[in-house]
Image: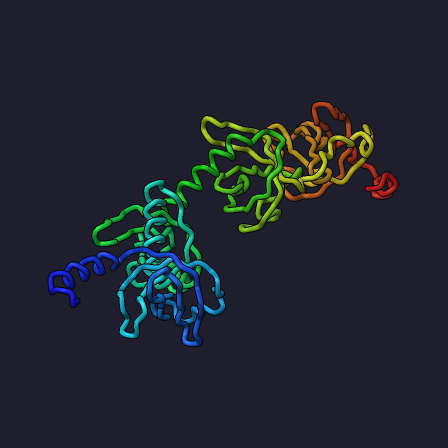
Length: 364
């Protein structure tokens, strides 16, 4: 008995209800054209054309799937014209990707994806068929950087704006950078302690020392902590951009200040000063500083002594600079040595009238 028009119409409605349905079946064959035939428990087999498997041109189902694998797809048509149920694996994948994206947005999770393209306004990242735009202002990229260099690079970002109806998504790399920087700084100040060693980069130099980046934290490396020689300049020891090892010697966590010492400063020369110098020794010194009461002289890097104005020469002088100049070398006799307080007193006048031969015998 032939079915009535009403019965046929009702059956068509039932069939239409199957359109869009998600079905799972077993792969029974994969053709060289990339078509996938699936047993979905219908009277007819399901077929997934290559374009409904993936949008990627190089995607090859034969390399990614095998006969007997289960696959989930969406019904597009009950009959593709050849008696098969037309299916889409790609649409199921895209729906799952969108759910994952929305879940990450909900929980403010970080995405790590490859930059697909750039334009004058920013970066474009694709996750499946979903496009995320990262404006230049939220990219964390410096103005002098070339945007094109970021194509193909992985970036970490959050999606900060999302419109479900239109699918519009705005991402921010800057948001992630700032958060990670804040966490890094918090971890640093929580764990830093006096005596701890760090490797840092010299960021700038000044007359009194250098600033060293310890990973987002700037520490001061004073010249007195770089060398024992007070007459050496910071740029003679380190260079901007140089990586050096430093030790924390002072901390102010409340005001976020840190003082450092250079790992290559070496041992304090005053520790063995009494092994090298003795009262009565005649030494060659260099005038390094002139004061109203006398001159400071260097015996060796890190060891300085004072020649009082009364010990410069036999005749009375009004000012030390009347007799000596900075950089001038002279012979002097050690008349007092105080290792504990790091003081050496010398006399030049006591050598007046002595012969050159005498000073040579003393090792001068």
